[in-house]
Image (cartoon, rainbow, N blue to C red):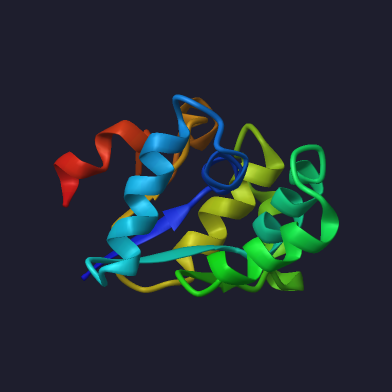
Length: 137
């Protein structure tokens, strides 16, 4: 089973149904539901997505949806060592650097899925746009 790290923007696309991007997020989560891929994200992605999604969904409903999403998405805890590593790293964007570091914490991570490819330059893990995932499975 492929291990796929999901960036924050994919979670937001899914829950907010941001078209045309939500199509690919739905496909990815459908693959996870059918046990064809194992999805991961960082713990801070869940928090950031929740914060961003409050514009689209009421708090009570958003908590329910997030709880359901967590059935298909395993969060990777961001700890102090990861934060320090991210601060010392030369990634263009600190937050995206932490995403790469979190994805690297899982042995055998196959790829990272994001719509923000350029900020993941230098990742030792392959980075794919959501519309390119099907071709790699």
